[in-house]
Image (cartoon, rainbow, N blue to C red; front, side, top):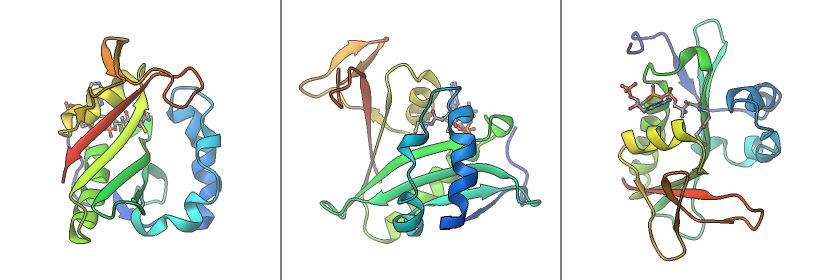
Length: 166
Ligand SMILES: CC(C)(COP(=O)(O)OP(=O)(O)OC[C@H]1O[C@@H](n2cnc3c(N)ncnc32)[C@H](O)[C@@H]1OP(=O)(O)O)[C@@H](O)C(=O)NCCC(=O)NCCS
């Protein structure tokens, strides 16, 4: 079911949103403890390229934390994207990515990058549906039925790297 017009509003996050994001992160990622991936600095220094999605009554429906690569200003990177489990499969994740890509496209970004844990099937399906291709370059291996970088962060975790033009 698509999002009815006007039902969700997108805005830039503020530092004051940090507490409410932290409260939902572990739950929205299915119980994984991931809140350490969202220290306050993301809501201090990356708000100009990130998005919050809210219902008309101000309830949190989703968020996307991303940035323009300081090393390659033609590249946008999505650090975290998630939607409220009650709002999934209604086009909100696509809408958040669309806002991010359109905004960065106007600022000269020509490619997007994101990563996910190799076991995160919904994230892999989602990114592929959005036109991302799975990096299969040197160093990748087939794990969990997907091509991933084993031990990507040196912590034993296998990571899928997504790339998309524009
Ligand atoms: C991944 C996530 C952000 C998708 O959000 P969403 O609002 O449900 O996404 P959309 O409704 O815009 O989905 C767009 C398309 O992606 C694909 N997709 C999304 N979720 C999927 C799933 N669980 N299984 C298969 N395909 C899926 C579908 O093709 C979908 O289009 P369709 O519903 O018309 O078939 C959401 O499931 C989530 O927050 N997951 C937990 C956090 C996470 O893993 N984030 C990504 C890694 S940082």
